[in-house]
Length: 377
Image 1: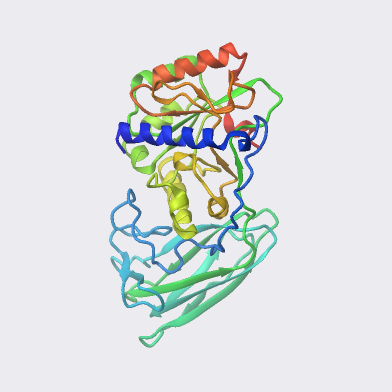
Image 2: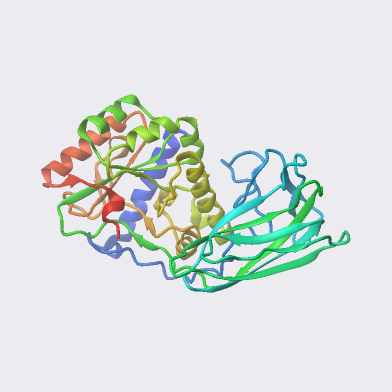
């Protein structure tokens, strides 16, 4: 997204918050969920393999799913239901063609996992459940579709499991469709625009990542600023060392900002979940950390966002109380910065100057920057 478009988006978000007027909560209060009821979301992401590659996703990727070998997995129109199904051709005799996804669950809960498969020696199962779980499998489906099903109960501390589908060594291609995980859904994520705290703290957050500058990185290091970064996966993949550098100060972290930076309120609940979960998976691959906070693009969200985020392991959907991007100094609740305020910035060519103004505003209010994830509980 170009700088003018990002600036326009930020201005639009600021205007939207301003229009809320008295409905915007005071500092120290969580944002209330919108009045619309959330959609009923499947616990799995893209279980029918119907969501196309996300606009800024990896070419040929299957949203919600990770697959082992390059070029092994794709889609076929010869589906069990809908318009497409997973089709996997293992690259060689030493590959099973495994595809998997991480799913959030509730501890101590019972789940039933099922899928329709086609091929020889196809396996369906779950790992990380807290107990040993035997996979469901078939020696062959006779060219048609066959339903596999298995059950598991999560351990007392289990909050996520890994679901998988795979074939077997030297057994050729297989297909899968219409995965279903039946059981208790995670509690929706909490939406907030600040971090309720009795301490005189302010929280600096930086979005996107298209223009990482050495000046900003140097300022962050010199001032030892705890930064919460919300980069897009494509931007982070271009310069991962930079994002490790700007989040090296204790209290810093890298969190989730979706894959494609689309207004989530224009998407279905299933598409929202794909955007959030796929960004989570990219972060795990790139940085080895799992996000627990989601910053919605344009600061817009709805009830579906909260459930979709929870299904991706996100605990908080975080907007902001102030925007200091691109030379701005907008404090949405009016007046000076207050304890617990979350300042929005962007990785742009103005970030060093923007950080300087945000720090000056924090100093004037008697606030010091602190680590977001250390206090957002």
